[in-house]
Amino acid sequence: MAPRPQPGAMAAEGAVGELELRAAIGFNGHIPCGLICHPDKEHVLYPLGCTVVIQELDSKKQTFLHGHTNNVSCLVVSRNGVYVASGQVTFMGFKAEIILWDFQGKELLARLSLHKGKIEGLAFSPNSLYLVSLGGQDDGSGTIRVWELDLANRKIRPTECQTGQLRRVITCAKMADDDNYFYVGTSTGDVLKVNTNSKLMTDYGPQKEKFSSMKNQWKEKRRH
Image (tube, rainbow, N blue to C red; front, side):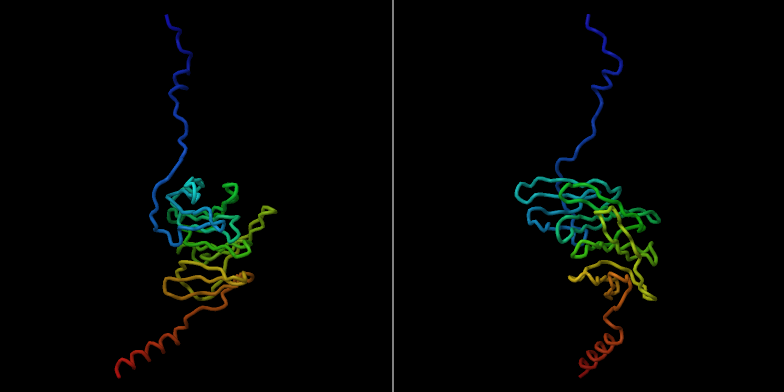
Protein backbone atom coordinates (compact mmCIF):
# COMPACT_ATOMS: atom_id res chain seq x y z
CA MET A 1 0.00 0.00 0.00
CA ALA A 2 1.42 3.35 -1.02
CA PRO A 3 2.08 5.80 1.80
CA ARG A 4 -0.39 8.66 2.18
CA PRO A 5 1.00 12.02 1.10
CA GLN A 6 1.77 14.42 3.89
CA PRO A 7 -0.68 17.33 4.35
CA GLY A 8 0.33 20.21 2.12
CA ALA A 9 2.60 18.08 -0.07
CA MET A 10 0.20 18.14 -3.02
CA ALA A 11 -0.34 21.87 -2.61
CA ALA A 12 3.41 22.45 -2.71
CA GLU A 13 3.80 20.29 -5.81
CA GLY A 14 0.93 22.05 -7.56
CA ALA A 15 1.99 25.56 -6.54
CA VAL A 16 2.79 27.88 -9.44
CA GLY A 17 5.86 30.04 -9.03
CA GLU A 18 6.12 33.61 -10.24
CA LEU A 19 6.67 33.81 -13.98
CA GLU A 20 9.83 35.59 -15.04
CA LEU A 21 9.88 37.58 -18.26
CA ARG A 22 12.74 36.25 -20.41
CA ALA A 23 12.19 38.03 -23.72
CA ALA A 24 9.89 40.61 -25.26
CA ILE A 25 9.00 41.00 -28.92
CA GLY A 26 7.45 44.24 -30.07
CA PHE A 27 7.89 47.99 -30.30
CA ASN A 28 4.89 50.26 -30.85
CA GLY A 29 6.82 53.49 -31.47
CA HIS A 30 4.08 55.64 -29.94
CA ILE A 31 6.42 57.41 -27.51
CA PRO A 32 8.45 60.31 -28.97
CA CYS A 33 12.21 59.58 -28.78
CA GLY A 34 11.31 56.23 -27.22
CA LEU A 35 14.10 54.22 -28.89
CA ILE A 36 17.43 55.24 -27.33
CA CYS A 37 20.95 54.12 -28.14
CA HIS A 38 22.97 54.03 -24.93
CA PRO A 39 26.19 56.12 -24.90
CA ASP A 40 28.23 52.90 -24.73
CA LYS A 41 26.96 52.05 -28.25
CA GLU A 42 26.34 48.49 -27.07
CA HIS A 43 22.74 48.71 -25.84
CA VAL A 44 19.38 50.13 -26.88
CA LEU A 45 16.57 51.02 -24.52
CA TYR A 46 12.85 51.33 -25.19
CA PRO A 47 9.57 51.17 -23.26
CA LEU A 48 7.12 48.32 -23.72
CA GLY A 49 3.95 48.60 -21.66
CA CYS A 50 4.88 49.00 -17.99
CA THR A 51 8.45 47.81 -18.60
CA VAL A 52 11.69 49.36 -19.81
CA VAL A 53 13.64 47.00 -22.08
CA ILE A 54 17.45 47.09 -22.27
CA GLN A 55 18.80 45.04 -25.18
CA GLU A 56 22.39 44.22 -26.08
CA LEU A 57 22.97 44.98 -29.74
CA ASP A 58 25.30 42.06 -30.47
CA SER A 59 23.83 39.20 -28.45
CA LYS A 60 20.21 40.49 -28.49
CA LYS A 61 20.03 39.61 -24.79
CA GLN A 62 17.34 41.57 -22.97
CA THR A 63 17.16 42.91 -19.43
CA PHE A 64 13.99 44.40 -17.98
CA LEU A 65 13.41 47.25 -15.55
CA HIS A 66 10.20 46.56 -13.62
CA GLY A 67 8.62 49.09 -11.28
CA HIS A 68 5.92 51.07 -13.06
CA THR A 69 2.26 50.40 -12.32
CA ASN A 70 1.00 51.66 -15.69
CA ASN A 71 2.31 52.29 -19.20
CA VAL A 72 5.65 54.06 -19.53
CA SER A 73 5.09 57.44 -21.22
CA CYS A 74 8.67 58.73 -21.61
CA LEU A 75 12.26 57.55 -21.28
CA VAL A 76 15.66 59.25 -21.13
CA VAL A 77 19.30 58.27 -20.50
CA SER A 78 21.90 60.57 -18.94
CA ARG A 79 24.72 61.70 -21.21
CA ASN A 80 27.32 59.74 -19.21
CA GLY A 81 25.16 56.61 -19.44
CA VAL A 82 25.02 56.13 -15.66
CA TYR A 83 21.33 56.89 -15.11
CA VAL A 84 18.03 56.06 -16.76
CA ALA A 85 14.79 57.89 -15.97
CA SER A 86 11.31 56.78 -16.99
CA GLY A 87 7.87 58.29 -16.43
CA GLN A 88 4.44 56.77 -16.61
CA VAL A 89 0.80 57.57 -17.23
CA THR A 90 -1.86 57.03 -14.58
CA PHE A 91 -5.49 57.91 -13.89
CA MET A 92 -6.64 61.51 -13.70
CA GLY A 93 -6.03 63.02 -10.27
CA PHE A 94 -3.53 60.34 -9.22
CA LYS A 95 0.23 60.69 -8.87
CA ALA A 96 2.26 59.67 -11.93
CA GLU A 97 5.66 58.34 -10.93
CA ILE A 98 9.10 58.97 -12.33
CA ILE A 99 11.60 56.19 -11.63
CA LEU A 100 15.33 56.81 -11.57
CA TRP A 101 17.42 53.73 -12.42
CA ASP A 102 21.07 52.74 -12.18
CA PHE A 103 21.96 51.49 -15.65
CA GLN A 104 24.96 49.37 -14.69
CA GLY A 105 23.26 47.58 -11.81
CA LYS A 106 19.79 47.63 -13.44
CA GLU A 107 18.47 48.76 -10.06
CA LEU A 108 15.79 51.20 -8.97
CA LEU A 109 17.38 54.22 -7.26
CA ALA A 110 14.40 56.45 -6.49
CA ARG A 111 10.72 57.07 -7.11
CA LEU A 112 9.76 60.69 -7.75
CA SER A 113 6.04 61.25 -7.16
CA LEU A 114 4.84 64.85 -7.51
CA HIS A 115 3.26 65.11 -10.97
CA LYS A 116 -0.33 64.08 -11.66
CA GLY A 117 -1.93 62.19 -14.53
CA LYS A 118 1.03 61.71 -16.86
CA ILE A 119 4.72 62.42 -17.22
CA GLU A 120 4.93 64.18 -20.59
CA GLY A 121 8.70 64.41 -20.85
CA LEU A 122 12.07 64.09 -19.11
CA ALA A 123 15.53 65.55 -19.75
CA PHE A 124 18.88 65.11 -17.97
CA SER A 125 21.36 67.96 -17.83
CA PRO A 126 24.70 67.19 -19.57
CA ASN A 127 26.44 67.02 -16.17
CA SER A 128 23.73 64.61 -14.87
CA LEU A 129 23.11 66.81 -11.81
CA TYR A 130 19.61 67.89 -12.87
CA LEU A 131 16.53 66.13 -14.20
CA VAL A 132 13.77 68.19 -15.81
CA SER A 133 10.28 66.67 -15.68
CA LEU A 134 7.08 67.74 -17.41
CA GLY A 135 3.69 66.91 -15.99
CA GLY A 136 0.28 66.89 -17.63
CA GLN A 137 -2.46 69.51 -17.51
CA ASP A 138 -3.61 68.15 -14.12
CA ASP A 139 -0.51 69.70 -12.56
CA GLY A 140 -1.66 73.29 -13.02
CA SER A 141 1.22 75.65 -12.22
CA GLY A 142 3.49 72.73 -11.26
CA THR A 143 3.84 71.44 -14.80
CA ILE A 144 7.64 71.97 -15.03
CA ARG A 145 9.96 70.74 -12.28
CA VAL A 146 13.71 70.56 -11.88
CA TRP A 147 15.10 67.80 -9.66
CA GLU A 148 18.57 68.38 -8.20
CA LEU A 149 20.25 64.97 -8.00
CA ASP A 150 22.67 64.49 -5.11
CA LEU A 151 22.62 60.72 -5.23
CA ALA A 152 25.93 60.30 -3.40
CA ASN A 153 24.21 61.72 -0.30
CA ARG A 154 20.83 60.17 -1.15
CA LYS A 155 19.22 63.59 -1.65
CA ILE A 156 16.90 64.68 -4.46
CA ARG A 157 15.42 68.19 -4.29
CA PRO A 158 12.50 69.17 -6.56
CA THR A 159 11.67 72.78 -7.48
CA GLU A 160 8.71 74.07 -9.47
CA CYS A 161 9.60 76.36 -12.37
CA GLN A 162 7.79 79.67 -12.72
CA THR A 163 6.57 80.93 -16.09
CA GLY A 164 4.77 84.07 -14.88
CA GLN A 165 1.45 84.79 -16.56
CA LEU A 166 2.28 82.59 -19.55
CA ARG A 167 0.15 79.45 -19.70
CA ARG A 168 0.95 76.74 -22.21
CA VAL A 169 0.46 72.98 -22.63
CA ILE A 170 4.02 71.66 -22.31
CA THR A 171 4.96 68.73 -24.54
CA CYS A 172 8.76 68.24 -24.50
CA ALA A 173 12.04 69.45 -22.95
CA LYS A 174 15.68 69.76 -23.99
CA MET A 175 18.71 70.83 -21.95
CA ALA A 176 21.30 73.26 -23.29
CA ASP A 177 24.88 71.99 -23.51
CA ASP A 178 26.10 74.34 -20.76
CA ASP A 179 23.53 73.16 -18.13
CA ASN A 180 22.50 76.77 -17.46
CA TYR A 181 19.27 76.70 -19.44
CA PHE A 182 16.72 74.28 -20.78
CA TYR A 183 14.01 74.70 -23.39
CA VAL A 184 10.46 73.34 -23.40
CA GLY A 185 8.16 72.98 -26.38
CA THR A 186 4.43 73.62 -26.29
CA SER A 187 1.33 72.57 -28.19
CA THR A 188 1.00 76.12 -29.60
CA GLY A 189 4.49 76.09 -31.12
CA ASP A 190 6.04 78.42 -28.54
CA VAL A 191 9.42 77.51 -27.05
CA LEU A 192 10.13 78.58 -23.45
CA LYS A 193 13.64 79.22 -22.15
CA VAL A 194 14.09 78.46 -18.43
CA ASN A 195 17.09 79.17 -16.20
CA THR A 196 18.20 75.93 -14.52
CA ASN A 197 19.52 77.68 -11.40
CA SER A 198 16.75 80.21 -10.73
CA LYS A 199 13.98 77.98 -12.18
CA LEU A 200 12.50 81.08 -13.84
CA MET A 201 11.46 81.49 -17.45
CA THR A 202 13.75 84.06 -19.05
CA ASP A 203 12.42 84.18 -22.61
CA TYR A 204 10.02 82.61 -25.08
CA GLY A 205 9.38 82.79 -28.79
CA PRO A 206 8.60 83.29 -31.55
CA GLN A 207 7.18 86.68 -30.65
CA LYS A 208 3.60 87.11 -31.82
CA GLU A 209 4.17 90.58 -33.28
CA LYS A 210 7.11 89.48 -35.41
CA PHE A 211 5.28 86.42 -36.62
CA SER A 212 2.17 88.44 -37.51
CA SER A 213 4.28 91.00 -39.36
CA MET A 214 5.98 88.30 -41.45
CA LYS A 215 2.62 86.72 -42.20
CA ASN A 216 1.19 90.04 -43.38
CA GLN A 217 4.24 90.67 -45.59
CA TRP A 218 3.83 87.24 -47.17
CA LYS A 219 0.16 87.95 -47.90
CA GLU A 220 1.09 91.31 -49.42
CA LYS A 221 3.62 89.64 -51.74
CA ARG A 222 1.03 87.14 -52.92
CA ARG A 223 -1.29 89.95 -53.95
CA HIS A 224 1.39 91.41 -56.23
